[in-house]
Length: 168
Image (cartoon, rainbow, N blue to C red):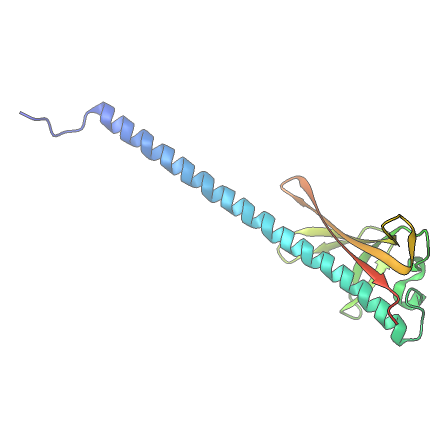
């Protein structure tokens, strides 16, 4: 006569196997959620950095339209943003809420708080543009946009750069 009932050992092994599978699936779901959040923050940071570079291009072009030198015009660049040889200056870009979408520069760190509660710090650094031999290129600067944020107690950084020149 065959015994059709499960033995205790078979039941324990089946439950153990199910627990192992459930823990693995839960771990994969959590890992996927964290990776999604990290990727979302990185995409947002790249967008903020790109916006900073576009603001600098807009300011250069606006200077030309207002008959300033391409790297002059305190009312547009701010008194501390005059570009000159040997310059390496970091400025913090902040949105001016009095006339959106206007931007101003600040010597102090500013944060951008997005709707999802993530806080980003955005800065623009102006460098001399150098040729392959390390000599300054006349009428050209390198602009580096840096965006920093904290993701799960780890500081993350995205940097984008471009060269601006006197194109007129």
